[in-house]
Image (cartoon, rainbow, N blue to C red; front, side, top):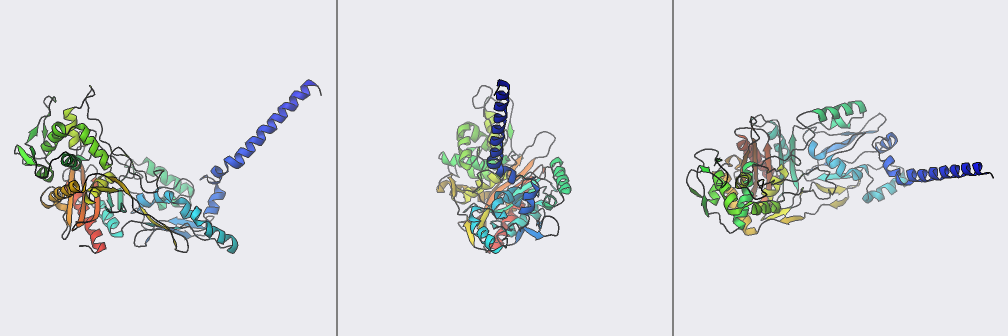
Length: 501
């Protein structure tokens, strides 16, 4: 064989080798990706040839289910309550990626999870396709209904906000609402053009209805931050009756002409006040000076971290953070020289400056106080059942962290109950229950309305029932008052459902 032919032969062999390698790469390494690609219509037709499993709430009511159709895709995913559960249950589009619980438990709902091998094996022999698994959520119908209706019809006509409620003893999610919401049925339709148009419209909406304000919106928490300051003060040796400085104005050291003031001249005009009364009336000057001159930035940050700041509070079995939680932050409290800036520390102490918190984090703070200082990991999936209704898995509550001692938690409970009994949180009061909480009004920049906050808990005797956080975004004057009222209605509804009042 002459040299040119030999070179051609080598090239041909090399090309065949490359083709062989690429073929094997596509067949073996890329097979799963192609098979599960949301644009693979053959896979979609196969997936929709059997009913996707039901998602239900604590009372067994279905909030997502599959309905038989006569088109190419045999089953249509439907959401009977439309906007009410959208930011928890999510949506499952024919083409595209699922969201929230629909994505978190996608394999199980589709019937492809390892735990469902027996069901798939039986289907091979019988020829009968079994439906996907059933996902039972921890959500309380009464709490969710109250959260949705009260937030949607709030007295201030605020259009943006969130409510989230937890069981302090277990971490179970009892309610979660974010407004504005969206109708997942628009995204699960088999009309791909209509689904795409609806999704793009939601993405383009400046009010961000797809965003979950309960878990992923971080805003200045205002005076709800004072619960963390109070915890740091108690841990440093103070008591609820410890007398601290107050007054109409406070000028942090080295801050020039800046003066911190209270919500009104009558809030805490006297030069001193007890720690408990300072929390009860929400005295800015007392907590500003307490943070800047007694505790300091390091102790404040340390206590905030103990409550969970700086770390996204992931739900149980959600290693990929499908539920889309984000970390709350204490921000910077230093000046240009890198040293603690007293004015920055004072402002941070009342939940301003760079402090940012999600409603979920606020609920976790209140829950830890109600639960004797122990913070439980949040979870939303209670049980997984196969098509024969056998329970395959049940979530067991797990401790996330010990925040403060039982003694300090007890003092915080007393102080927060004082806020509701005789202070700024009165609208949250519920007959027959011990209710504690903290209001917050957070400045939102110039020429914009303040945010209204409330975080709190309800107890029957010494037994914690529910912890809740309410955010009314840009609600303006009276926002924290209305947030407290909404929280009270949610907690009351849950207590009545439980029969514990």
